[in-house]
Length: 336
Image 1: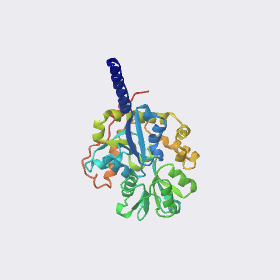
Image 2: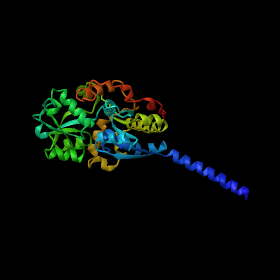
Image 3: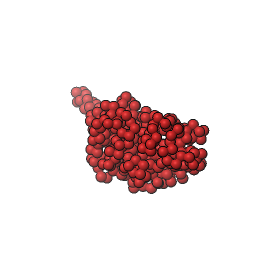
Image 4: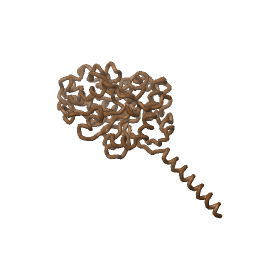
C-alpha cells in the first residue's frame, strides 16, 4: 500500500510539474493594435496567422483600437502588455514623465498619406494651403494628428488655423470625406487605395517611401513598432524576447515573400472587398518594413525634431532618446 501511495504521489508530482510547465510555456499576453486592418500594422496579425506566437510558447490576444492614442492609454493603465503603434508616442510620453520604449521597430516610414478631397485638389496644392481647412485624423493626440500638425507648421500655418477631427480609418474616414465633414486627412492603406480608386480624393503628401518621407519630414521617420512600458520590459525580459523572436521572424517573412503571398495569409475582410488593390498597395508599401526590426540610428532625432516643432510638452524638454527604444532583444533573435 505504501508503494502504491508513493507511486501516486510521484505521479501527482510529475503531472503537477508538467501542467505547471505547460502553463508557464503558454504565457498569456495582450497586445493592442492601433488599427488591425491597416497595412502598416500587418506584422501583428501576420505573426498570429503564421503561428509564430504559439511557436514561442505565447498565447497572444490581439485587441483592435482605431487610434494609437487610445491604445497608449490602455498600456499606461496596465490593461495590455504592449501596443503595436507609432514610435513617436515614446518621445511624447517621456516629455510627460512616462517611460515606454520601442522593442521591435517594424518600419522606418509612417506609411501614411495626406489625402485631399478631389473637389479641393485645385485649391490645396501643399500643406501651406491648410489654413482654414478641416482635416481628418485617426484620433486627437494620435500620430496622424502629430504629422498633420507638423506639415502645417513647417509650411507656415499655425496649428490654431487648422481644425483636426477624429474620424478613425476605413469606412468612417471615407464617409467623413464623402459627406464633406473633412476637406482631407491622413490615413493608411487600404483606405488610401479605396478613395483613389473611386476618385473621391487625391494624394497631397505621401509618407510611404523612404525618399518621400525624407523630402517631407527631413529624414527617416520610424513609425510602426511594438512598444511597451520600460518597467514591464525590465521585469519580463524572457517574455519580451519571445515577442521579439516572433516579430522579427515575421519581418523576415515579409521581406522574403511577395505581396500576393502575404495577402493570402491575411483574413479576407482585410481586403475591404478589393483584393487586387490590397495586393497592389502592399507591393508598394513593403519597402516601409525593416527586415531585422532594428531602429535606424538617424530615425529618433528626426521624430524628436518633428514633435518639437509643434508639441509644447516636447519643445525644449531634455529627451533621452536612448530610453525611447532598445535593440537588445532584436539583436538576440536567432538567425534561423
